[in-house]
Length: 640
Image (cartoon, rainbow, N blue to C red):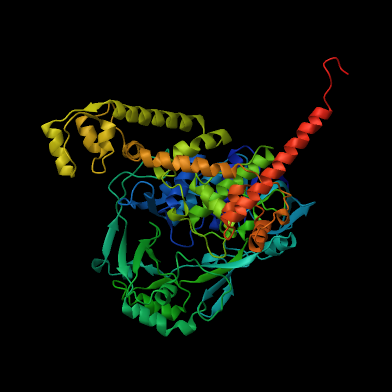
C-alpha cells in the first residue's frame, strides 16, 4: 500500500505545516505525515508569535505567501508593537495567541488545500537509492514513493524529558516521540547530535493575585501580521509583570544539587538567549530579580504561561519557587516545567536551499536544524517546501541573500556557521537591518512569492495599489513646499525643533528627527488619508533615505563576494598559506561562494584573500583554455 507523491513532509509542526502548504500551493502533489494529528501546529512553549527579528520573519513569510501570519492573526488575544523607541529597523509586532485557535486555523487550511494529503503515521525509514531520496516507509507498514522529502521532525527525535532527576522518553507536552527515523538518518550518513530546550510551569489564573501586578494591555491601534489582513484592536486579555525575588533565588541555589542541568544529567546545550531561571541566577549573581511575565494561553481555559521562568528543577522545588513570586503566593501549578533533549542535524550538513549535502532531494527544516522558536521553524519550513517543489518542477532553487531578508540571514547563519545550541533570530545578527524592516517586507519579497505562484491575482493587485499609494505620497512630499507661518512655527517649537525662516519641501522638513508625518499632514494633507502602515513606510523611507542608501551600497559591495562561485570539487589543500583550521572548516562546510566562505567562523580575511587569488587564477586559466580551444577549432571563411 501507499502511493507516489512529489513532496513528502515528515512532521506537522510550524515548519511542517508551512512546508506542506507551500509545496501544495505550488502545484505539486504533497503528503504531510504527522505522528499525531492532534499536535498539528502545537505550541508547547509560550503561545506567542513575533517580537524583534521573529516578527520580521513572520512578516516576510506573509510576503512570500506563507500561512503563519494569518494563523497568528486568527488566534490573537492581544498584540503590541515592541521597540518603538529604538527606530524603525528593529520595530516589530508581538502577539499573544490562543494555542487552540492557532492550531485550528492550520488544520482547516491544510484540510482544504488542493494537492495536499494529510495522514497520521510515523515515518520509520528513509528510502535512498544511489545517494538520492526515493521515498519513506512508516510504522503502519506503508511505503510512499517521492521525488523529494522534507524532514520537519522538530523536537521529537529520540526526545527525552527531564523534571529534576526524573527522566522519561517523551515528546513535548507528553506527546509520542520518534525513534526509528533517527537511526535511518544516521544510516544515510547524516550526523545527529543532541540539543536541549526548556519550558516553564503553567499556573491556574484564578489562583493568581493580579491586583498587585503591572498590567500590559493590547495596543489601541488596529494591528495584524498578515500583509492582507485587517488590523484589529483587542480587549479582554492582557499580560502582567511580576519579578523573581531574593527568596526565589535562594530556593534555586538551595536545590541546585537536584538540578539535572548542574549535575550533568543532560547532554545537549540549552538556549543561550532564553536561559532557564536557574541558569540566570547562577550566571548573574549580582541581580536580585529578573522580570517574569504571566501570559494567557487560550480563551478556552484559565491556564497561564510563566514567561522567563523555564526550569528543569523537581516539581516540589518548582512549586516553592512559584510561591516566592509576587502575586503567585497561592498559585496552583497545572503543569510542571521541564527540559527536553532531542536529536538535531548540525546544519552545516545542509546547502543554502536546506537540502542535505549527503542525500539528493532530502531537505531538513525547523527545529531539527538546531533552531528555537515557532517563527524560525515556520520560515525554514516555507523555504524547504518551496525548494522541494522547485526541485520537482526542475527549476532553480530559491536562496535569499542576507540583504534581502531575515530569512536569508537565518539560513545563511545556520548552514555557514552551524550551531551547537538552540539558535534564536536576533536583530543584531543582521548587518543590513535598516533594509530589512517590518514595513517593507512586501516590497522585498512579494514579487518572489508572486513568481512562485504563492500570491494570487487579488492579493497581488491589492499590493500594487498599496505601493502606488505610498509612492505617490512620497513623491508629493518631495515636491510640495511648506512656507513659514506663525502656526507652523509654533508647532515646530512645540515639537522641539527650530522654526522655518524660508520655504522648504515637506520631505526636507520630515527628515528632522522631531517632525512627524502627522505634523506635516496637518499643514499639507494628502489627497487620500493614509493608514498607519502606509504612514510608517513613507515616513521611514524619507527620514532615513541617507542611511538606507549607504546600507544599499554596502550590501551591493558585499553581494559581489556572493557572486564569486567556488566549484563543488575545489581542493582547499591547493591554496598555499591557508591556515590548517581554515582548511578544515572550509572542507566541512564546502561554501558555495567566496562570500559564504568569509562568513565561516574562524576563517580569516587573509584566508579569503588567498582563496580569492587561487580562484581567480583558476578562472583565467579555464578562460584561456576555452579561447585556445575555440581558435584551434576555427575555420577560414571559405571553409579551409
